[in-house]
Amino acid sequence: MKKNMRNRQLLKLAACLIGMASLVLQGCTGKATNCNNLCGSWTSVEGKPDVLIYKEGGAYKVTVSGRSGISRRLKPATYLLVRENGNLFINTGYRIDLSYNEATDVLTFSPNGDYVRAETKRKKQKTWE
Image (cartoon, rainbow, N blue to C red; front, side, top):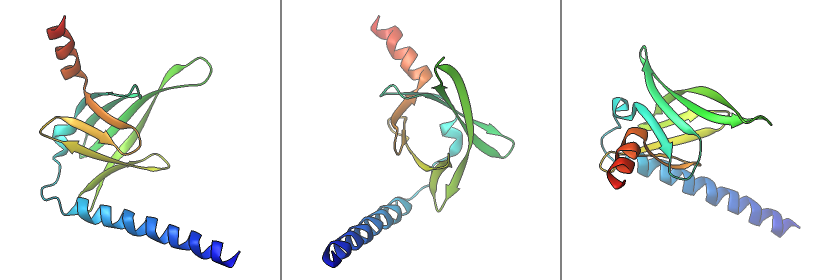
């Protein structure tokens, strides 16, 4: 029983250290993301809810258009985009990290995967038809 407890504690410690190391590495990537580049409508590659990022006053906000309840009505939720030590995230009750690849114009949410600009997706669909 005691050995099992030590193993759990070691696993938790290892997970914390790996998480901290990844945050340190993200902080060392160089230039910070310009939030103006993030503004616009984003569509999930994996069928997750659509996202709108916009500037209101001096703050950037993220609106997630999710469906909820039995009727599956569209219920938008808006969160403040926060920059902390060069990392972007929103707090929905859980911390959801954001990263942006400027070269490919792809926005990645830590648990929800990749998003592409809605305008870009429409343009690609028109050129394929």
